[in-house]
Length: 281
Image (tube, rainbow, N blue to C red; front, side, top):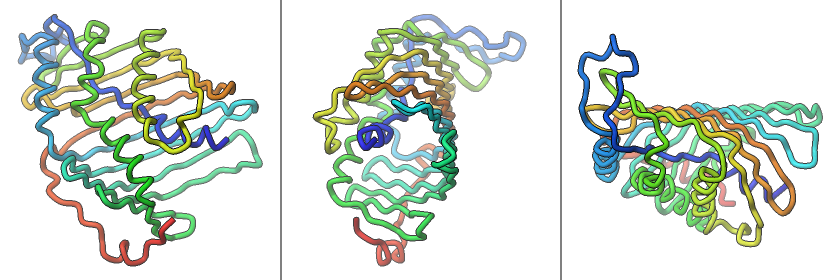
């Protein structure tokens, strides 16, 4: 089960946005009074440039996951609500939220946890709600975290999916360019596997794990602001099978992410009481 716990740490996959060469059709003809003539490729290029200039952002994430545990007739439902302030360079993150877990196995019970974390390039503090204790993770964990943080950088994501530009539908309303994707199959399995592999490269203990995955379906809804070209919404629904060392787990994920306050988060300070009271693990 330990190997599955490791993989679940990177099971949330943020793939970014894509583009092609047609102008955006109005999502609703009557409602679009400011029609842009930019092509999908032009929007992609401008979004790429905007993401590379991004210094900070605020995110709200609502994520629902259902996992069928391998070798067991047990489903695990995990619901997470998170608010995050994120400064890219130097890395500073403050995250608060709740996670609830329900299982069809009565012996596992139901749990709800409040979460809070502070992350910098040198330290990772997290609050463990059940014990009421702040914990400080070792430098080894920081190296793993930095790897996955680099993976989620918007400009890196845009570069990775450039080869899938033609697969997105391109529309617009008065405020946003709207990109949608409904896909499945080997082509998109390779895209997701590439990103998971990159996220796992520096994680301890996974180098010997044999992993395979099949994307049963993946759907995206992405909004890009017409004025700033910042991505302000990413909704993703994913159904995938992951096989690790001969055991297969099905995971369904529905994640809604809303982004705001672009380049307005100026500083995140770890409270001194957190530093003083944290227990190193």
